[in-house]
Amino acid sequence: MYRVLGIDPGSLSWDFCGLDEDEIILDTSLPSKELIEDPKKAIAVIKSMENIDLMVAPSGFGLPLKSVKDLTEKDIFFTVLKFEKKEKDKLIGLGNVLRLIKAENIPGVIVPGVKHLPTVPNYRKINKIDMGTADKLCTAVTGIRDQMERKNNRPEDVNFIMVEIGYGFTAVLAIENGQIIDGIGGSNIMGFRACGSLDGELAYLIKDIKKKNIYKGGVSFIAGYQDLSLDEIILLAQKDDQTKMALDAYLSDVKKAVYGISASFTNRKKICEILIAGRGAELKYLDQKMINNLSEIAPVRLMKSYSHLSKHAAQGAAFIANGLLGGKFESIVNNLRVREAKGSILDDIYIPFNKERLLSDLD
Image (cartoon, rainbow, N blue to C red; front, side):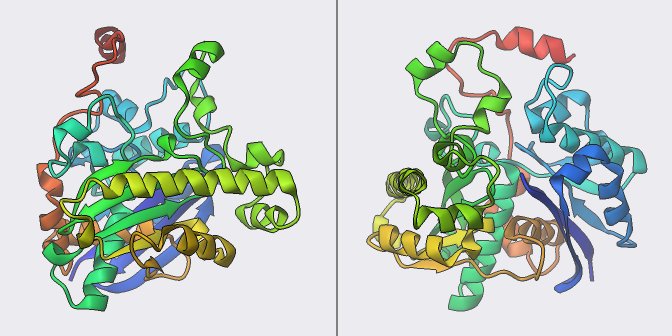
């Protein structure tokens, strides 16, 4: 029996899911703002679960599988992709939490992002960084378990497209034969906060692009109500033309992403279903819109949740920790080839920039 913990560092909340083999023994969520102000609150939650065998720590953009105790400052930079001395926002909290976990000597690992996986062909990685952060890998694991149990399948028989709708970002992943073969990360699709792919000419005109630009320009900004919750945006879209246009733009962007990633399968007929996950999966109005938009590709379903509070990503992180130890979910983790992840998110970038200077600044 293994006692494991999974953590999802989300835009709105940090979720914690603890398992004793397959029994949930910790299921809680903390507002991200609280953890920015006091990162030690995350440590208090972690320590409330005694005798942890392994934790999948908050991993950001991920690394090839690595123990938290071996993390360097360069590693932390690659998980957050943030120049911490120059800019401050919620991602700084992630770096601080990782430092605290390391200092407390809590047994934990950083898991890969989609770009690190050997199951994604290199030609799909060219000039891309955000193909799906580590928490998207974790959500995919929850989806794999879901389909396996419903269809009594082996991991190798699982095929679906995942759409994760978060508070700020939306991501789309392709899972074929139980492996992630492609991904479109949250900075490349319009989200409820994030703008998605930034037009090259617009980037030129903006000139001094900062990390904060990635978190703006999405549905709430188009609607003109930046602080509204997802529920409030959905309600407003049913009577306000500007908000309806914002939601239409979002749904169109997601539809294009799903249709586009369907081309990554060896045969589109293999796509068994489209699984909707994340905070937005709880909104019936949005679910119905997704069904109407995407059912031509495959049946659309809500991904099963195995906990009451923690989201799919935290659940999947716990399943990965269990699998890495040889527990119930070992076959899923082995098939994903998580241990074979390698490389850097800066690999396969052919757009000229001063990579050497960046790396030397981190030393």
